[in-house]
Amino acid sequence: MSVYVCMGVYMLYIEACQCYGHTDECEYNEAVASNMSSVDIHGEMSGGGVCINCRHNTAGINCELCRDGYYRLFSVPLDSPRVCQRTCSHTHTHTHNNIYSS
Image (tube, rainbow, N blue to C red; front, side):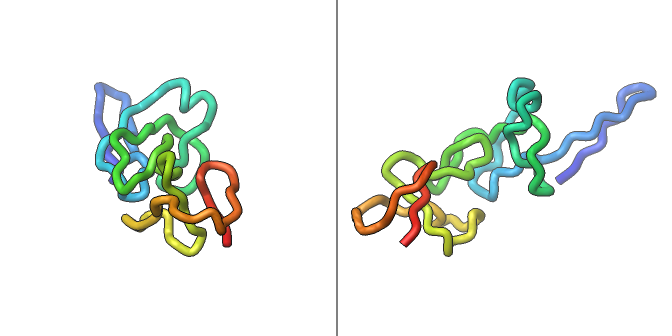
């Protein structure tokens, strides 16, 4: 959701964080914005939104990673509550950021 806030003659545009539905909490971080480390709601690396209290065993600036001990299969959409599954098998090939491929 986008919000427009009028401040005198200036208008401030505030955009919701991209947390893929894994939290409703986020905050602006100037360092993240400067490094362009956050994905915005349009899928572009811009903005400074940092998701807080990621649910569904997710982690990361945009709740785009899996917590330690969990993995993500590429066939599961990133916005699914079941995106991160508990690691229980060593039959998968480990890749960066706890993402597994068969």
